[in-house]
Image (tube, rainbow, N blue to C red; front, side, top):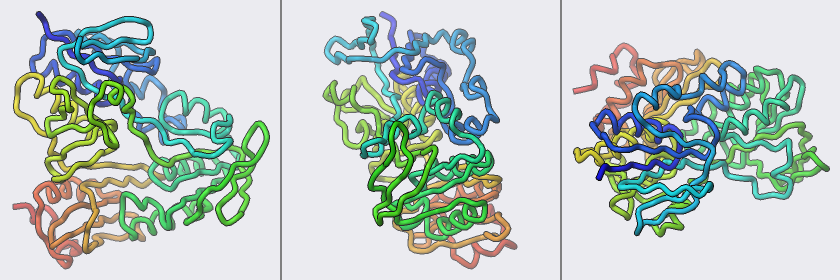
Length: 405
């Protein structure tokens, strides 16, 4: 009997898995099921190029429909998977269709964390996760409007940059004492604070949100210290919650994501998970972690495809991320948790620099701003766990690639 791989989720991981399976020689049936009524698309541009109207919906699509047809991949969109029967090895869709599988992959991603306050679902409160989310936001994203952003992470800062470009009056509130607190060091936080402030963003740090006031629409955001901020449109960017409900209902092991090993295999040997919904036993980080990034989703997809095809593969790449704000490209590799020293190479004043994070003299991560060549070398330095001293890293007369053995 021919094998069938069912992929739940039509995003980056699911799309990449279809191609990887064919590239690895899988000749069975592939069915990819997506809840949204569109082909798999790139999510990172949603808060950047798509919100600013520099990219069309079709340009978001990872591949055209013809590519899936050529690869003999069945793409089912606009329908939800309601149930998984692990004993019978099938999935039941919301339309009643039942599809048998030999291998199953969760690529279900996540959903935007909601603000836990009355009024958080009113028409002018927006979350950034889907094309539909941005389409609703665009109608209110108009010059002169008072845009209030809750959350100083990637989404919030990217939306702030687009808001300034679109001539909105932008205020950003962040509960933590600095921007990007969960992903970078104080030096980068201060740098981005200065950048956004200089562009006209009114940033309020250490500012928790206590209430939303108004009638049909939210008109004011009340901070923990009692400050009331007037707003016409609100964007909430306070994190992502992995979509694990189906996995939990199927009695798979779940803890901040579907628990998987280095082959991306869940507690059921015939079920895998990749992308934002998966909590990995990560081969490079040497600890369990759930990562939210396109490269992580793509690597997981390739590992699953190889494993299904009987080949050796492990999820062990050094994680990397990026963010575009104004004319600044931030590229990051590694996780800086536990760093002991940070070394700056280049000039923050000239918006061209790299920050290297060291622990025990080993480069464990790096953040680069407008330095793509530094970033390419930094990926190798972090992946190779290269040792370096501060004087060498900060000296621009020393080529970074000379540190690679």
